[in-house]
Length: 81
Image (cartoon, rainbow, N blue to C red; front, side, top):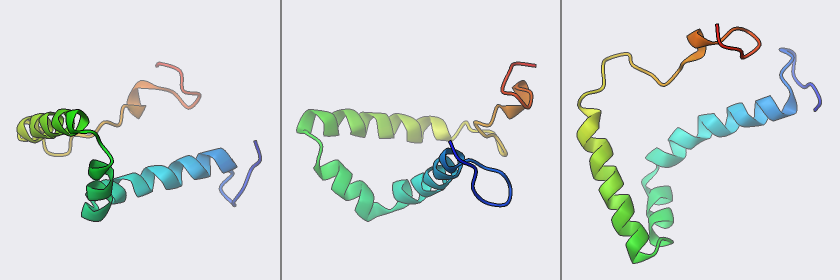
């Protein structure tokens, strides 16, 4: 594990951050979604369609400002506070 950049992030941390930034962009890119969807079997497509419908249904209950960030539960070492 090597350190890169001026802020002291490791190469792995930098790669993880870059890939996590790119994921929402890919998920919102209709061409990427269409090509991934086409690679699924009909059964997988049906399961995917059901899951997307469920996500769309429950999204209306999301509270403004709500995130999946739970960093406030952990200290600087990643241990529960």
